[in-house]
Amino acid sequence: MFDPVQLQSFLTVAQTLSFTEAGRRLGLRQSTVSQHVRRLEQAAGVVLFTRDTHAVALTEDGEAMVGFARTILEAGERAVRHFAGTEVRGRLRFGVSEDFVLTRLPELLNAFRRSHPQVDLELTVELSAVLHRMLSAGRLDLVLAKRRAGEDHGRLIRGDRLVWIGARTLRLGPGDPVPLLLYAPPSITRDRALESLERHGRPWRIACTSTSLSGLRAAALAGLGVLAHSRTLTPEGLVEVAPQARLPELGGVDFVLASRGPTEPGSPAQALADAVLADGDGLRRLT
Image (cartoon, rainbow, N blue to C red):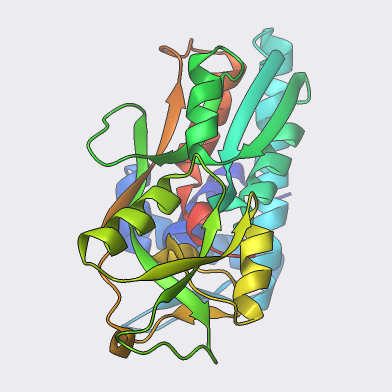
C-alpha cells in the first residue's frame, strides 16, 4: 500500500519540478517533502526523479507513478465524499476554447470524470468569443477561454503572448503581403491580427479561414500562410515566423476561467474550477 501523504508530496513535486516549491504549496519543509518522495521510492522499489543542483525531472517510472498516484488519491477522496454524503453531483456545461485542444486538458477532464462520476459533464469546444456569449446567455456554466485586452471578467489562469507562427519552410519578405490563416469571426486572435497589420500599414490577404485549430494547423503545415497564436501553445510542426519578416507585435493575452456568477461550494462548477486551478501546468503542455 502506498501512503497517500507521500503520494500527494510526489504529485506536487511532479507538477512543480521543484522540491522547494512543492514544500511551499504543501506547507511543509523541503526536507519533509524529500523524505516523503524517498520513502515512496523505497516502497515502489524504483527511482521516481532524477535530480541535480540545477533541475528535477521525472524518470520513466516517475511518469507511470503520476497516473497511479492520481488514481489512488482520487479513489480515496471519492470514498470519503460518498460515505460523508457530500459527493458532487449534477449537470455541468463546460466550454473550452480551441487553444486547449492540443494540451493535456483531456487528461484533466478524464481525471475529473473518474473523481466525480455523478457529474454529467457536457463539453463545448468553440472560439473564445463564442463561449463568452454562450455563458452570458446562460447556455454554459463554466468557460475556460481567452478574454479581450482591457476586460477583467473571469479568474486569470495564465498569461501568454500572441505570436505569428507558420511552417518551418515558410519564407516571407519584410514587404510581402501577409497570407493570413484566420479563425472565422468572432475571434479574438483574428481581430488582433487584422488590427495589428492595419495599424502598421502592412498589406495582407486571407489565405484560409477555419473554425478549428486543426484546420488552421493543416493550412499552416501546407505552407499557405501564418496565423496568430498563443506562443506557449504552438502546435506541433509549427514555429514562430522569423524576425526578418518584420511582422508587427501582437501583444499579450489572458486565459481565464469564467462563470455567470459566484460558483457555489460543492457544486460541479466549483469542483471543476478547483481541478483546473490545481493542475494548471497541464494547460501549458502539449500532448
